[in-house]
Length: 241
Image (cartoon, rainbow, N blue to C red; front, side, top):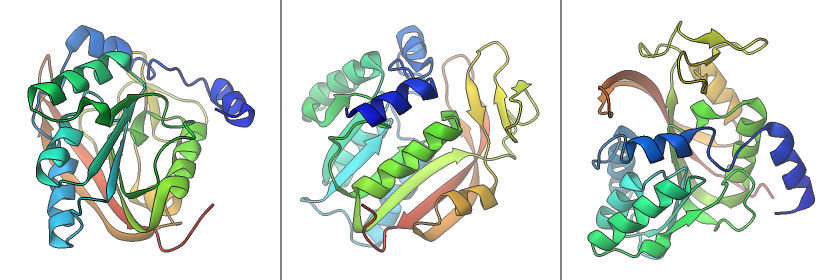
């Protein structure tokens, strides 16, 4: 990690523990079960429709958690998978799941994807429900990584909570100076809910092919959650380095 990124990393308050998620993974294990999330199913449908499941292409999963979506892609898409998450517990679980299903545990890596300068250039970059837990400076760093690693013609897929999310809208302690950001009651976790206009603005460096809202029930340890999230598919039309 170069000094500039290290200083930015420290000043942003980012933790290698994943802003409290290391604790969650230690406490609850596979929090959302083993089935792929909503974005993974939508992404695979898109990739198959556009003939993008190509063996020598790289799919990078930023914030892969314990690997349920990465493993789904490894089984059904057959591209080269690279999963990264800052939680050691989650990555250990992902590697164990890979071994149990006959897949390569080496596809999973422990590290901070906001600052890592070793991520592979990828035809597909994927991130499920990560943008919502990043603070403003972290979201900027995240977009910078997309600009860096997404190859020309490559596609970025993302899900992030909507301002219409019934589970979190109007709850928690509002963050001063940040519209639609709060600290969750009882959890102390930061959360940012997005408008459609915000996502379109933040990812305007991509050609946005799809941007729509979905409503779904998310299985979760301790009780299912009712969510609304934005789904984004955006293509890189040029080099941004």
